[in-house]
Length: 162
Image (cartoon, helix red, strand yellow):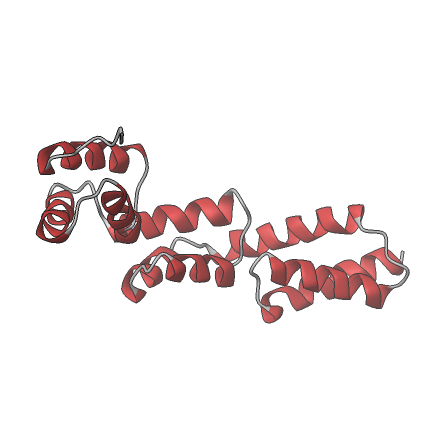
C-alpha cells in the first residue's frame, strides 16, 4: 500500500512558496519539485505563474545570488558558473545579468588568493611543472587561461627565483 500524499493545487502552491522563500530557485528547480509532488500540466504551469507574479520565483534574482555565492564562497571562475547556470536552464539574459555581479578586481584577487594557497600545498620539482599544475587547477575551478596566465607565471617565478 502506498503512503503517497496527494497535493491539491493550493497545497502544492504553499509547499512551493516555502521552497522558494528558503532560497532563491530557478524555474527548472521549481518545475522538478512540482513533478516530484505529482503536479502536472495546467496546474503546474499555473503554480509557476503564481509564484512569478507573487515574486517568489525570479530567475534574474536567482542568477545574481547564484553567481555571488559561487564566486565569493566557492571561488569559482566565470566558465564554471556559466556552465552551472546553463545546466539549470537559466536564460541567457539572466546569465548575463548574474555575471554582472562579478567585480573584476575582486575576481582576480580571488584567483590569486586561490593559487597562492595552492602553491604552498603543492611541491613541484621546477617552475614549469608548478606553472602547469597551477594552470590546471585554475581551469578546474572555472577560470580561463587568459585570466590565470599572468598570475600563474608570477607565482612560479616568485617560488623558483627567490
